[in-house]
Length: 98
Image 1 (cartoon, rainbow, N blue to C red):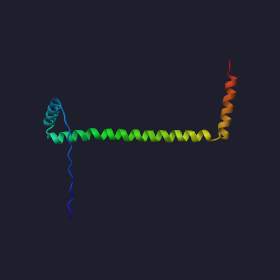
Image 2 (cartoon, rainbow, N blue to C red):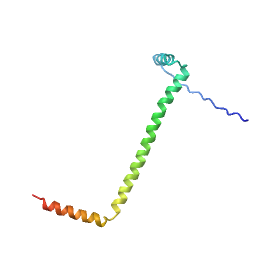
Image 3 (cartoon, rainbow, N blue to C red):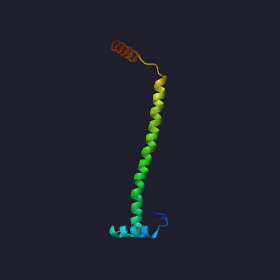
Image 4 (cartoon, rainbow, N blue to C red):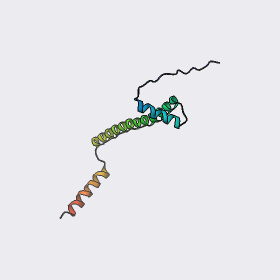
């Protein structure tokens, strides 16, 4: 049976003393190691950011599609029912002029 190896990568960044102390206190308060706390917190924060980005991208894509459909509709001739409705509207508007 083949064993599956997972590659562990290293993430390194610098923080000031106050930030490090705050993060360490939060890790202790949550009963996690500093590494576990940092990883858990970063992952929790990353997921909603990426979800919002996905929604935004889809929204822009949908907007473009919607505008394209409107442009296509402008090129179409109104059907008979729409022409009759427009005529009725114009007649009513003329009737109610003061």
